[in-house]
Length: 386
Length: 102
Image (tube, rainbow over all chains, first blue to last red):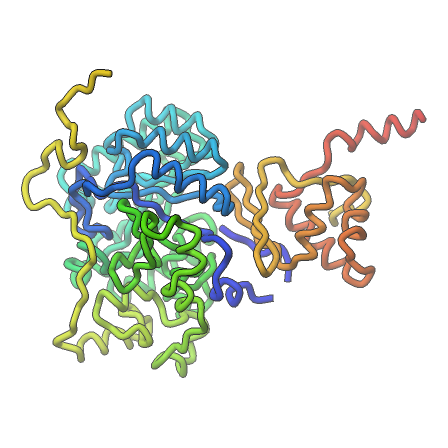
């Protein structure tokens, strides 16, 4: 967790944007061997336009020059890329640490050893239930067992730090203590994040997002754990309950956070894959740095925000109006309350707006047929002889 | 124990610094900790640690005034407690001994 080493309000500086992102998410592929019902990026099938290995190296060179200390790699399932380990090694050899998210299906003993041997690589295994029943309902049959096997292998390989990453839902909220016990069992760190109505998450958000009373319990539970449980600044809208949770407690979109998607599109944040939040494409603008520094969208996000209807609320200073993407994909105005506003303002607004015009994500790579090996690689099944 | 300004310190080798308009970000690749240096002057102090014999000399060379010194001492203490700044190994016990002989 970031800490402050001296003197005034940093959030003001951050809201005006930094020279380079602090937290950069890079989704390497839209291909995934799972089909989680809440997938933020609507992943499934590989996109034929995905960045080549050399283009990925080019991105890393830029990140190194910009002094982006680490990158959060995800997908899709990033490890299905044939060049995944090559990209990872290239990054860490160029002073860019890697934290990657995986469903664990390709964390073989060999892969676990590789993670353990590289000081600059962290891995987090996604798990959305502390039991197979709850997890597999979201992530698919067998996915709990797969994740547990990956955790066992990482522990056996002696990986110094790995995480269990959980998206909090109405169903798994009752398992907080079980998740904690599971993390302790493997010597892993627990990370809880917010269910966003982005990607396929928009289809299940209504029935799966935590209830108001669950949110309150989550807040108390997290406050109790302090730095011990990570949240990626996910729940800053809950700061309106009282004191803020550890973290920056602000919406970092386009200011300290952004997303590079598999085809080189740069979005304001990982939860906002939509044209309204697309700042540009790496290929057409000659690189990432120019998008980060000069794109119209990011410049706009870095201007002082008004707060709109929320500005007069007593709690505005704590929750800052909540998550931009959560509002956008539930059809709420960006200058109004978060759909999960702790005062219930978002909920009442949602119930009033019956015919909400809910935006759809820009890219949908969901599979509409059974998984074929070709979804992950165009050369699946062929042996390439060199 | 308060941060010892009279001793030699340096940035840990695993720490990378990125200047920003408000000061700088410091990232420790070993502990994965991110710290914010909230002034340009603090950045200058941290950068001067390596070439100056003591932290105090680094503060002076960065233009820290007598009045400001306690604030910078506390900032350095925070950085030391999270392992961002470490005592200069080559010049801690060994140098003192050599100095005694000389």
